[in-house]
Structure formats: C-alpha cells, structure tokens
Length: 251
Length: 259
Image (cartoon, rainbow over all chains, first blue to last red; front, side, top):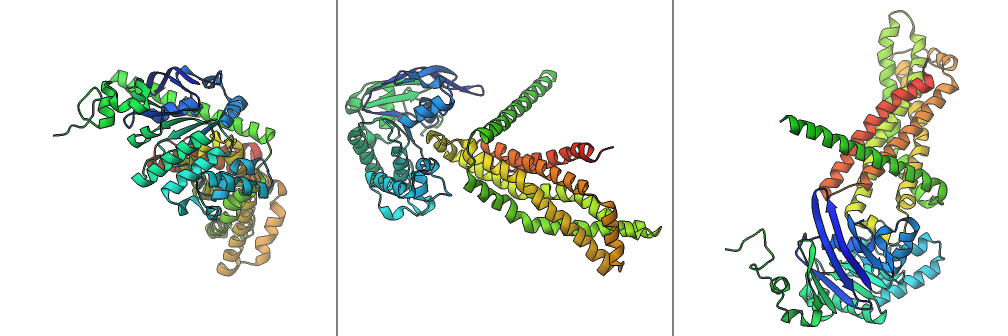
C-alpha cells in the first residue's frame, strides 16, 4: 500500500497541495482526477520523489520516500516507474537507446540489450522495426507506448502515469487504456493514473478527486457514476455549476 | 514607496544569494561526480567535437582578423618613431596573453554556452531530465561532467589556433599590405615572446572554458517555464558567461602576468 499522509507543497507563496491524504491499495489501478492546474502532476511527482514536499509523508513499502535522497532514492526509483505526459523520450537517442538506456549505461552487452528491448516493445504491442527510429519519427500514441516500454525495463511494481492519453484521439486513448489494464493484470502492478478521461473508469479500481489542494472524493471506480459526492458529480459530468468553481462562465 | 523599495532590495538580495548558493552546490556536485564516478568517454568525445572541433573555423577567422587589425593599428603609431620591428612582438604578445584566449572564450560562449543551455533547458522543460532521474541515471555524470570537462580541456587548443592565426594575420598585413620586411616581423617575436606568455594564455583559456560550460549547464539545468524559459536561460548563459570571462580575465592577468 502507498500511504500519502498530509502532503503539502508550496511554490513561492502559493500552496499547491494543502494536505493530501490517500491510501492507494496494492495491485490496483487508482485514478486521480481533477481540473487542470490543481496540482495533480505535482502530487504524482511528490509520490515518486521527484519533488520534495513542503510537509507530509509518502510511505511506500514502509519507507518514507520524502526523506530519501542519493543512493537510497535511486534504490526506490528501481521499484517505481513513471510514464510522463509526453513520454519524455530523449530526442537525440533512437528507440533502442531510449528504451535500453539503463542497460547501456550499465554496460550490458548489446545483443542482450536488443533482445530485452524487443521483449519490452512486444509487451506494449510495438513492432521491432521501430528499434532504430527516432522519437520524432513516431506518432504520439507510439511514443507513449515507447515511454511505457522504457518504464517496464526496470520491472517496477508500481507505475505512475501522468495523463497518459493527453493529446491522443479517442481510439488511441482506448488502446492505451487497455494496454495499461493488461499490464496491470499481467504484471500485478500497482498503478496510479492522472487523467481527465472518464473512459478510464472502466479499467480502474479506485477514483480520487483532487480539488483545491485536497482529496474531495475517494471511492470505487465502478460506482463513481452513481456517487452523490457534489465534487465528483459535477466533475465527471462536466457541469459548470457546483462546488468546483470555474474562472470562466458560460452565458 | 520606501518600504516597497527596501522590499525589492531584500528580494533581489535573497534571489542573488539563492542563485550563488545553487551554483556553488552545482559546481561542488560536478567535482564530486568527476572524481567519484567513471567518465562517460563517448559523451566526452562528442562534446569535444561539438564544443571544440566545430568551433575551429570561427576561432581561426576571429583570431586572424584580430591579429591583422592589431598589426595595422600599431603600424600607424610605431612608424612615427621608426619602431616597426615591434609590431610582430606586439601582435604575438597581445594574441598569446589577451586576444587569443578572450576572443576564443567569447566566441565559444556565443556558440556553445548558448547551445548547452538550450539543449539542457529543453530537456528540463520536456521532462527528459526527470525521466533520466527516474531511470537512476546520474544527471551530473550523464549530462554535466562531459560538457564542462570537454570545455575546460578543449578551449586551450582553440586558443592556440587563435593565437597562431592572429600572428599569421598580422604577418600577412605587415608583409603583403604594409610592405615590411618579413624578418623585421618575425625576429622581434623570437626575441620578446616567451613560452610563459603562451602558457599563461592557455591557462586563461582553460578557466574560460570552465566558466562558459558550467554557466551554460547551470542555466539549462535550472530552466523554468516553456519555450520562453529556454530563451531566457540561453540569453542569460551568454550574458553571464561573457561578463564572468571579462572579469576573470582581469584577475588572471594580474595573477599570471602581473607585476
């Protein structure tokens, strides 16, 4: 279980997260929803240790990740995978080098790297012929899958997805969701997904809604549509009226 | 009004101290990584090519023309009292001690410090640096050390080219434009220019190489915002590196050639 306890983050004079409390169950997919700019990505980066919180704890496997640094944080990273919003592939490297970067840096023999990378690409349904292509030569959906393949290389047991379907068409989004669900079941992963796409509720186990720096709803994904929680009711239906205020008004 | 003014002084002081603190930690981390981890040799060689080999042409052109201009300007003064034989040593000494290292430093700053800041800055805003961290890749070892080390080592070689072509530029002007005797130009150089002048110039260049690559890397690493942030980092890396090179040049001149 991942325990997030009273997590707060301040940038300059602005509090982004104002005390997030959440218990993310093992082996399940938890989706965090919320409006743009609410600090979902900041929350995710605090969970993985990329951003140090101002206050609070993130307990993963009994260790408070917010207190780790240097080698200990690196060790923790080995069990965690992070799929970035726009894949964050290195433009100067081809797909083989991007996916196999950790193996290359650890001086593993090239034939073994190629074999492992091909296996990971197959897991995310990508063909071998993209091995020597560069990220700029791939579509958005393919790049996201390469990002996932790169994450899978270290065999993590927890994967964090930062808006994995942003900028993709509905068909490709569905394919990515199914792929995430497959990975989840096949590899018995704990997944935390940030998304605006309500289609993901079909595949998720839990849903949390972040608003104004705090979790306003946490419940089963299967029953989220029946929930009368005013925040989640408004958000998933895209209603302009409700407790979530918008800076824009619809005439 | 007064409180706002005092506030702004306080805020700027805090910001400046924060930048100095971060830069100090960044450089300490560089040295720690340099001496405690294995050098990524292929990346180091790539940077040698990118910062050094690809800058040879601009270095040679600026060096040659600086030498030529220096020759033509000094000719006017020296001719008045028949001291044309001093033009050669003046050009050679100026190129070895000052113009070679400083011009090379400034030219490579414009070309490479900005490129380093833009490249690392783009990697920062597109989350490539975060991705490397989650993959347990040491950012200093992977991105920073090869660049700073390459800049520090390759700048003296570029400077040497600049010095050499500066002297050649001066020779061409003196002999082929002003019609001086070639021996007059070269004999003074042999007599008055010492190896310590060249050595001093090369030490300066090495320091300038360190400055321009470390500022470029630092500015890139701490880039914030989108494309505008990359633009700001790139501009700042050139401005700060150039100013620091000029300031460092004075202190190095006092240290290496001072009374």
